[in-house]
Length: 383
Image 1: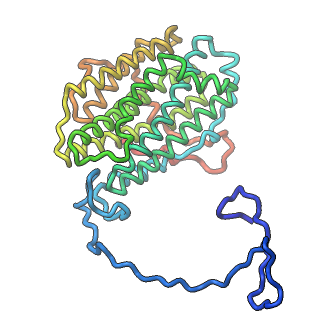
Image 2: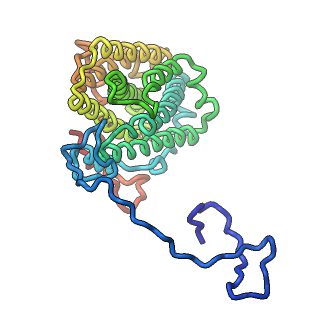
């Protein structure tokens, strides 16, 4: 029988119950007696706010309506994000990794192994950082529950992504201690994590006062970095070296895992960008364009250092020049979506195939053995 307090706990010992009318035998010192239940004397608490919630009164932050009341929606688009996210549901166990084991051990060059292991090292650390940022810094500051519900799903997805990377690393047989510590000892990886920590740490405070204009600006700038750059550029661009291997028929299982992750991250970035724009509109906030430009340039410099390390020796069909040029192109796209000026005018799309990875159709059976077809991901809309 399950113990509903702790399903993994051992069964509780059976207690000896002393009958209430047993006037002769007294319980020993180590025995437990169960007293008959007494009806609780409950006094209803007076209602302190009986006015119904008006959807027009909701706000993304600094709202005063009941955060526990989901509907009526003011932001129906946020609820659509939640529904849409649930269509892209999978686990890493659904995808066959057998060929990847053979590819890594028998087909990848030393340069390609270097790319693979370092990309996985960076991604797994970044997704944990993303999970903590949404769960601890962003979600609690939302004052409309339809926003929080999608972000709760986002926290789950970041945990799922971390599981996925761990599954790939473990399945291929890489040294987990070495891979997971690489972000701490490889300066080129560590500097991206440190930049992200510095950009996001200030908003981890639970006592942040978003009615203060300076603190509100800090929060919005940090969220713009998170949605527009961390997820919108670094993650989006970060999968491309693995996709380059996939295009040559290598590490296809890992690449398929990353395709599902990429579709999550596209929604994450899109949602974050939309929330930032909504806050700017509702709070009549004007961000400093110089600070915005500095934010993109700083992220670009960090990406150049990272690309120079993981692609110090180019692999067939992919180089550090491709990688950093694509960052500039994607950064312009995210800046325009945020309503900002393009940070890198004239940047060209050097990886024209990258967007196709987010638009894959999944209508085959995993392992070709499942009875029902997995089609929910293919039903996603990318408006």
